[in-house]
Image 1 (cartoon, rainbow, N blue to C red):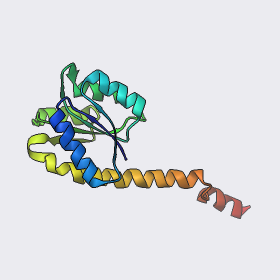
Image 2: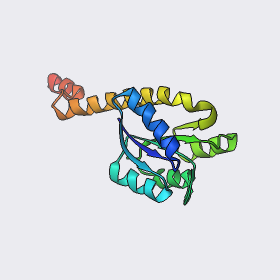
Image 3: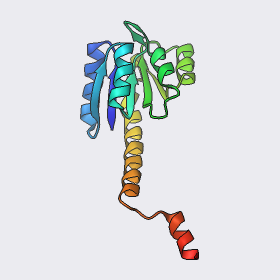
Length: 147
């Protein structure tokens, strides 16, 4: 699974990177510290998952969420922030975040969320690979058998 970490704090980026490295089968494809860098990284790197902070030097993670909301190839977004108020949570989820974690009290949930996503992404890739390798199309096979 390909992950982009978007946070302006080197300490947080290092901590998240350590968690990801310990999990295995997860590749950190990029790091971004500003809204502009994050938007570019999402477009250029096409990560499966983005871990996104809300507070950035040039704007808000909400700007990123709103910018990718209509893109069907947008990554799954995990907001990881110190702004864990119910209002922030609601606004992020309404703006397209898939998960919302408060750094100060929910950081330890990050590995569980990533394990679930990694299993999902792996299953999707396996299914896509099967179809590219000529795995039988069951609907087509059933129609052919009826002829």
